[in-house]
Image: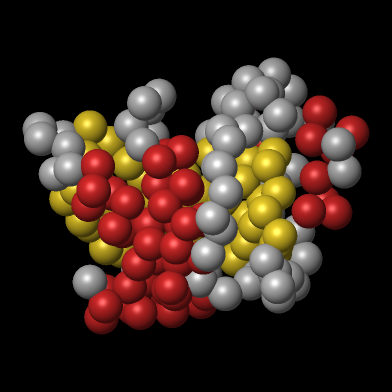
Length: 155
C-alpha cells in the first residue's frame, strides 16, 4: 500500500487522524505536510503531538522555523518553512543536525527547503473539500509503507 485517501468532514476528524497517526509513529521518520494556507497542516501536527503525549501548548513554527518537542526516547521537530526565502538559510541553522535516528520530523512547506531537508517517508497532502478536507497520504519509503498499512488497519 503506497497511498491512502481519507475524507475529513470536521476538525474533530482531522484531530482524530493525527492522534491515530501518532500511535503508529516511531523514530526515525520524516513527514511532509503539504497544502494551501489554512487547510489544517498545523492542526494535524498539533493532534499528532498531543497523540504522542505532549500536554503543553503547540506553537506554530511559522516565525521560528522549528519547534522542538522532547519525549523520553525521541524528539519531534516541527518545521514550518513557509517564510523561508532561500533553502540555503537552513544550512546556517544547522538543519542536518536535526535529523537523527531518534527524530520524528514534521515539515510544513517542504518544497521551500528542497535539497536541505531529508526526503519524506510519508507525504500528507491536505486540500479543501466541501465539507471539510481531503487528505491523501503517500508513502515514499519502506517506513512510510509500514505506517500506511498500520494506519489503514486501525482506522
